[in-house]
Length: 544
Ligand code: TNX
Image 1 (tube, helix red, strand yellow):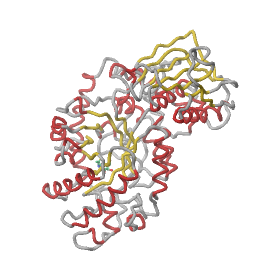
Image 2 (tube, helix red, strand yellow):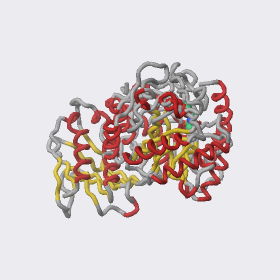
Image 3 (cartoon, protein in one colour):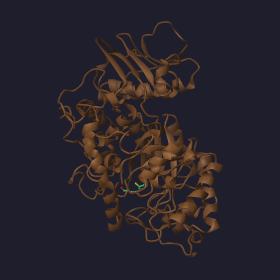
Image 4 (cartoon, helix red, strand yellow):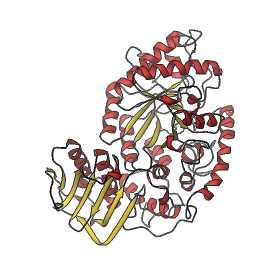
């Protein structure tokens, strides 16, 4: 990271720390209490906290050798979700767990039922009801996404060992009671930077498995930056041949072929996760400029850049028509491949572009995005110039653009909250954790309690409440180069952000959260997640 960017970012970030101190005043009582050692054993152990939980200590359902998963008749979605659940249960329990579509019944069948339709309307499209008695578990939802969410809760009601891929000792008890659950915000995102260090399709799928367990429903893929171009674009083969050849620190890297990208999209679709592809510009573009000489103002290709921070000349040439032909091809291609509503155009840290040139670039780009039928998403600065009515901004820093960003929400823009001092998963937890070289410091240290101590309603002053779509937690990968690193930086902070996005504000409570988070430890052990054993969390004895 260059000193210049680091210092500028740090200055911009610290004004946010003032807001952080407001958190204790604005959040409900209990939010700053010390962690308790009490490990929740009942239904109250789910992260993110469900909207309504009514435990029934008199009842427990036992998954046994005869347990069957029943799914709604003639619903390929329910069947698929049932098979996913059986895929979790079979290896660890050793049971057969058949998945059987059944017609509607008056009384729950003995077993686990995944039922589409007829749920309380207040649970909407992503919520669910979960009823556990001695005889049955019934998850009922209006839409498949809700059934999927209910299954994630059911997994968390079972002992963590259920996640192991080899046979474990039971019993496989589900605590009794009723849950009625639905999200507070429609957008609960995670961003993965596959440009600074490349992550394979398998690595991304592993992350998808981890984040969807916490009801994350958007995956923002940062596909291009100074150090790498990671997506194949027909007609522009050198983007991946040259731009995809390396990464931070040098050495070989990689890119997604169209088939690879489709594999990510399909894996995400089956987990009710919407992919938001990002093509950053006009800055953060050295990989493209190294691939094609004609994209440079002087017609000379940039050398590849494998350092950290901005490349010396990593900005696209604003006044060359080929820049926009290139963007039309790139954005057109990813719009064609990606089913979700957004194409993200970046727009961050354009320090070497004049405001007029920045506006010229963004105005062209927003027309290209609209032409290809998508909604523009961009880092906060982009919204200082784009049409608010057709744009979604991502708030990340107090760098002078935030007032304008907040203002645009009164003119039709929507916004997603990624405050760097709370939600940046690439920051260190403490001055010494993780050990160098992993983790950055410029936005401060983010221990788990800090990641949990904010709310989307106050983090961007002046924002229109109804324009806040939700939250997103970015993982930048300048220092992150393996799945073990990804695990360590994301867990246990990512579930904190997921809870801020999903759970009603009334459930926000540090003591409760830290206890519920502790219950995830054995689950992550079973999943072989390399999580940070934060001393702030009362992990159960025996957790590795
Ligand atoms: C700022 S957040 C950036 C990224 C870096 C990150 C490192 C944002 C929009 N820009 O390019 O990777 O800091 O923490």
